[in-house]
Length: 473
Image 1 (cartoon, rainbow, N blue to C red):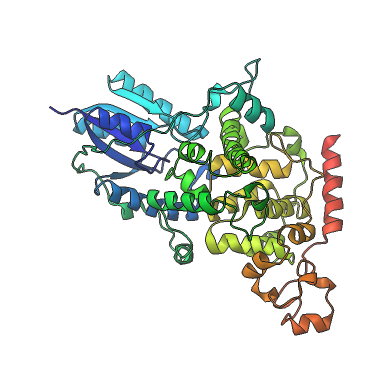
Image 2: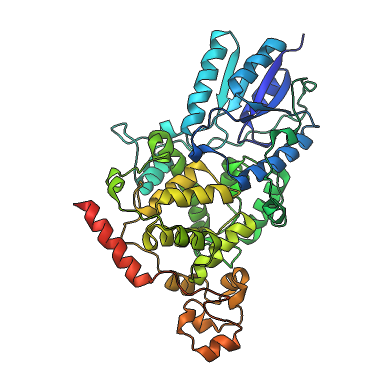
């Protein structure tokens, strides 16, 4: 009788460079499964957001098509579902690619223990990280908390390097669909409102689309990446983050393919951005409490202020600061935001509005197609000053200067804030400086069709710095 192996798809929704799928295929017939876990991610910080759930639905459709519609879908508790499959089918082994969030590690450990006790072979692999978090440690075996030594010394100097790309098995023998399987629609991933309809206008989803996106970036965006990546109107960002998050393409594929295709300074910088992703996963592995708490406990005393009026203005892109508003509207329109602009809008929320970073994280989690527990958590804590290798609290992004510097011709801002498209560039990032005649000629009824600033940058900065001085005592 042909041996049967289960490959459990998680954030590895691809056929190429998939170590677990290859392992299962080498051991006989494969039952590929995906389980929408509705049981173990009990904390709201761990829940999948609506934009990510939308992406996941269509990524699963693409994956299923690439495997001749033979992926089996389930919803519920993975422990119970895997136990049922083992009971009903002649399963010899179960394999998966590892996940790294605290709740997934706990769940997977329990399942692995059960399988071993019941004489089922279980194998796990690294599919989504260039370096395993437990392999990168300082000389005293403690984890790094600063990016530069983590990446330059721990990863590049003291480690043999990322694993090579795994070639896919051409003829995977797939088991017929199991009777317990659901269809993708039954996973109920799609949001109920029409927001999802406009997201589809901006993205192609799935493994083939991910590779096409990468090749386009490699061939046209990688050149001048080091400088160009800071300018949201330029094409020097890959926009691969949702594809990488769901594993439609692996960082290993990108790492090795991009090595010889641009000037060294651009490749080095692009690789360091992959390194920041690694650092985020590294942090939540070694400091899992930071997913829900301040890593720097000093910030537990910070006097955050919950102002629902300010929060709503920030969410809707109506703060009166054009670069902030452009970023928040880009997020709502596309499920994505340029990384430089993410830092600007995050700084504005936590340091000018004094709203807790966890509230910003929750909004990003719901609206970003690339919402990622590790990246989201580490980035928000970095901006707030409460995380590892955090930006100093006194580093407060000035949205006026940031707009002028990184969107000098205003093309990004005017794209997402069309009310200002006729305003002379001189006044674009501080429209309050324009007189009534200029505003009227530009079609702006100031305070009506475009809002006045909800706070003063200078005054709110002083308040934030004063609040920070208090928690230092």
